[in-house]
Image (tube, rainbow over all chains, first blue to last red):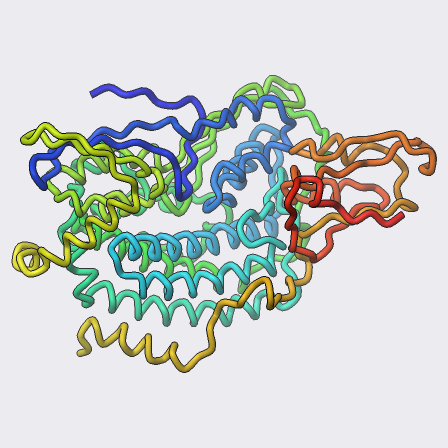
Length: 400
Length: 121
């Protein structure tokens, strides 16, 4: 199998145009081929035409959901280029935004995955809890989705008054909610029928295919940048790695639910131990860096995010390379989807937390009937929900 | 031990007693939080025409046009609000605090030209 990688970064948000060709035999999927590159926007080239300071705002527009991680990863790399160390308080606030964002991203994913499985009640409740996080973001950053918090040498805004109290109130709330979520994930019949033993990624496959983030951790691979190297303000924080061994979609759901609890613990630590002092270094907007190169990585909600930056001493970067976690995980889908039913595709595909809308056009080739049909994402979800209602009783025995 | 459907049933019954979390947007409006990054506001009498805002804007949303009223450099910024990404870099770098954010988030229009920055002249 050969395919071409796009030159630009892939937009890992929802409704991304990406094409998958699944080879099926009757109802069973025997092979899949992802075709990527439809959302190429040339951002890496554009970054070479903007100044180092402006690129922080361009980097956060690569992704709408993990915008703070993109901006933070870029600024972390640019700080290596400029040979400057941001003040402690700046790092703490940056980490606070990262962890809040992880909670928001995982809640969004839970909602979307439940919607794909036809469980819209839970989808509404998950997004209702996400709204609480977005309100916190509005108070902290002034916007709900694109935060513009990090800059080279720290962060741009200090904590608003009484923000620590809000976090203190929020942490017990989200932990209580996660207990309900975990109960639901382990006992609800709808979730068990659609997630348990579906899309299994073996541990050896996860290592071979280079899976990152919750996709790898759901297969028992201890792969987390926060665990491997302590960046930001993670050193000394109550971080613990969450690993599930089953490797199916339910394990990935449980990893994300438990990670929200870990993030809530880190949030509490960050506001308790917030140092005083300046929040940034106040670098001039037209500061020139020395000739240097940097490699920066952070743990985004979807997995490891990598930035490579190169400076030739000018106001603008010589080269910027971005590797997003969805690109690392997309090959795992092929391993996960083999041997599954067509109706399982939405859940298996959603389990890596890609852009679901990537599946805008699914081409299904039936090798027995030699027939081709193209389904849109909505048609596929409708088809799979109907299919599961018909086959629920047989599946209960098969997947118990 | 509760069965699975019992959890979601209890949750639904609890929520039924509460009022809806969403609002009926065009008819009801909620206040943005303090420090919201909404529509830009520009003050004529504070501007000195230094063009720093136009230089740093990451999305090229600010253009400088000649204006005799501004001293010492006879130039004023024109905001193409539809291009703005609300990063606030211009607000940060302005030496005279001539640009600021308002808390107005109702940036709606039928044409790009309808979405305008607030100019105080």
